[in-house]
Length: 426
Image 1 (tube, one colour):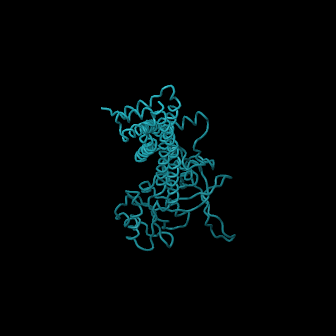
Image 2 (cartoon, rainbow, N blue to C red):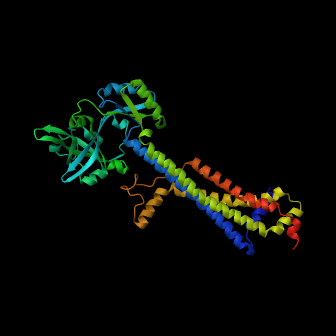
Image 3 (cartoon, helix red, strand yellow):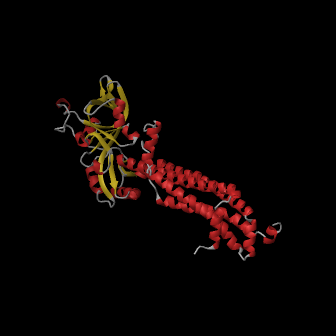
């Protein structure tokens, strides 16, 4: 059965003609809370989506742990990989070579990060995203039966480049380009840059502009030959079963192998980026919470005006035996109803937008003819969204709590009203 305090609160929310102004303020309070809650849910979902998408893309191209040697190139990587495989938590390992070089196609020259990878086990550790054209397997030197590759180019070593890099150089699948190494060859004429032709056997698209425009992959064997590294590699990349335990697993690997081996995990290598994202998320939460606080002040002003309007009603209720607590409950319920309605509809609207943000962003792009996230400016080319229900719960509880706190002073003033003073001139 509904209590009389709640019944009176609901009656007070229905405006009479002379109370239209109070009702408008109440509506503005509901609208303010609605906008604040919806904005908080949408923005935090986008921030979570950015962090998750960024982490997935970074951990696609890069491994969870990189193991290297203090004294330079790693010689016995086969033995090292066998020992790494025995460490608990390690899923897979692969050798890699990392170097800087230049790509030359006609008059177009650009600097790149050249990575040599083992085609047989690299994909167990890293993920290059979508191979838009060609195949990773074509990186093997002299790979027979590649459809579309001419006979005279089949003897050339293969190279896999990003889509943006291919656009910048104006190169297409199965075309040749030259890789120029910064470490030159000594000749009687002095140091001459080492240059070797490669054929583009694949174009990948990671969705991460920085990688798509700067990375090029060749096979481990071809990279060793091109850089005169013999049988050495830069290090070993490791994949683990739990990315949040990568630091502990890296320490376990270091302990097992001892000096001169050292490991770095993905959290160390990207600490600044993810710390900045978390800080930005907290700041956005605080800034957008101000919308809810402004709405709370509207609730306070609306309730104070209602108390002033209802002096006579409060006095009559008190003479009929209503206690101070009961009077307080009437106005607390009124403020909580305003807060709950705004929170409910704000939550529904926020979740609806957050779950359909990608489709909405595409619609806006088509409607106004511009790109919301240009790939050459931002890390990501699409607007990601991931709803964290813990964040939604925090927003709901926080908003209801703010609404409750905003009712305390007006309801306390109403409960202190003296019936004799209120009815003296009636």
